[in-house]
Length: 330
Ligand code: SF4
Image 1 (cartoon, rainbow, N blue to C red):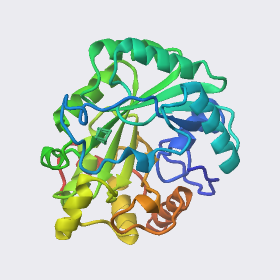
Image 2 (cartoon, protein in one colour):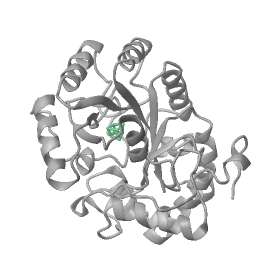
Image 3 (tube, helix red, strand yellow):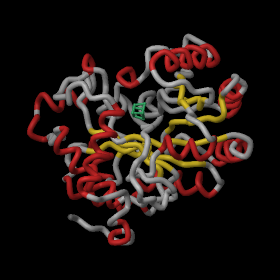
Image 4 (cartoon, helix red, strand yellow):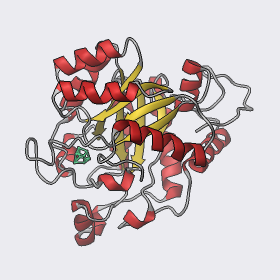
């Protein structure tokens, strides 16, 4: 998401890009690019092992989003080493890294195990912090206290999978938690000084586009430091694939053109203080069971969104004040 800026207007996030960008946020914090390196530390998920549910979220196939160098067979250090090499070959050079505990629910273990894994990552040269992906029901006071202390010495972010702010949707996709549980986990984490992020999926079945747009106002009221968005994709081997095959009319998947216009409207309603890390997520084509958007790289997508925002002369939060304290369904 790095991009030189020619725009003269400086927005409240301190630069001329039309959204509060994650890469710019880290440049401001560290004075240089910071690269995330994914880790699969062998955690599992309470929505798969029967603790909270069985079978997992209906859209879930972790392999579709897990980089090839990630496997719990390798140690955390080895995965970081290979991840750094992977990014060095493909992208711009960086000498600062965030260890991203990405696969499954990375606080779903005894605290001692978490401490060992996180300490190993933080000891790796160049690693300046942790990003820990988890579920709202996989955290407790003791773990939060530990993470809060850790965050005084390192960059640390907890990234909660929230996916939707509507319980009817969460139920339908078998998330195994409610929006209220997500809200409570986010509020508690943020109150302890932990950078708190959330992940949402746009286009889930049973949710109208108006409801999705209203979601921008709802999540804007949370003490979130950052957010990530994915458009819904139907992934092979999932319960959702079977649902899609038997009832395709139940799904209103975004085409790229629709998503571009929709997402800009969403950004206009989003609290400008929230850093936006991702607009979309692209599973490799071999995992897709539904229509895709062709070969669009993340940086191309960001460029297209920013270009369109310039044409429309709009920006993140342009309409935020109008819907920050009530739902607006348009
Ligand atoms: S999406 Fe996350 S929470 Fe849901 S089943 Fe998969 S790993 Fe578990």
